[in-house]
Image (tube, rainbow, N blue to C red):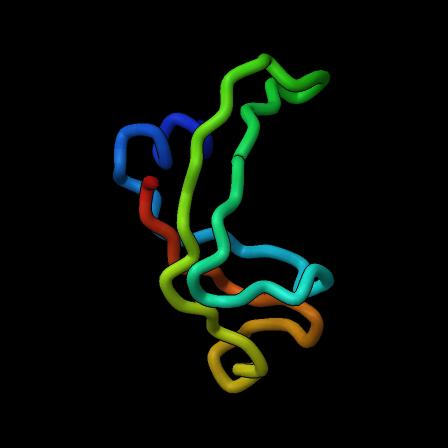
Length: 71
């Protein structure tokens, strides 16, 4: 469901563990996971903005929200 929402353009953000030094402008390949394995489908997205260190809005330490757009 999450992958399809990105594919359709309805999902424009990703909550991620902030362990990969993400930057605006990064290009990511998101791969579809069916709960047991990768399906072989993927989609290219570009990071347009990153939200970090916002505990006052409920974002846990060590996590970030990536705003994304399809490449």
